Length: 355
Figure (cartoon, helix red, strand yellow):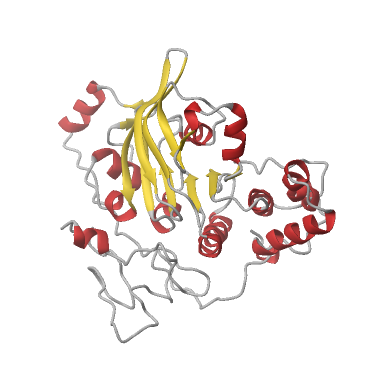
């Protein structure tokens, strides 16, 4: 089971440049969280700070009762063993086979016999659909498979926290969909705490339990997925709708003159898109941390955007599952989160899928 990460008042700057300040959030144990934000808002810096590679100017990062910002290097090294990290480009050694890349952390940080290393490496490669590719070099496989190899390497030490730095970077929409499904299935299998940094709105709308948005040197919002996807905050609406009009500009924040011109032109931001159902596991089940569709909106008296949580031909509104129909469990099994019909599929993802 994953562990909780509690961040309080975190501030980071490089010289006079403030990256973000007074960031506070809690990553719930075992849940999938996503961090969104315009380019240059310090999302990757946040990941490096959480794992102790960068030291914040102020604030605390509490994990299992220990504050990472005050630990000695020796103690910090021990806490880092809780983490696995999938880097943007996979960060694989080009001259090593996939097998040796994935085995590297075990050989460096443990005293396991080579037979034990082999068992673990093959187990993790099987989890991410890479069996049969052990001898291949990173340059001989697709970008999607390199991401899978990087993920397998992040898993070999059985981490309780996994950080994903733009895992969909450089992938086409189909490969991104395969990777998203893999993330869901892995979270269900190992129940670790996941934090994903991404620009992909479709990923953020369908995968996580929680979403955050970094903007203009602060954390604009963080909370359950439905809270952000139903928010009327202008920065949220602009980002989710991928619009030029709104507070986000090319240099992150628009100045007062630009905003005044938009207001004078009578521009109105489009409505929020419907909230999709959250992605299920490959065999159509909910994960232990997955909330019922519409539960947050109902509990907080929030009306979701029209068409939210569509399922089984329902046109609009929150779907109330039939308590006698265990096959639904409040979710659809024959539709993708974007509403596109899909055939049932329960087999494991394989390298032949091209991801």
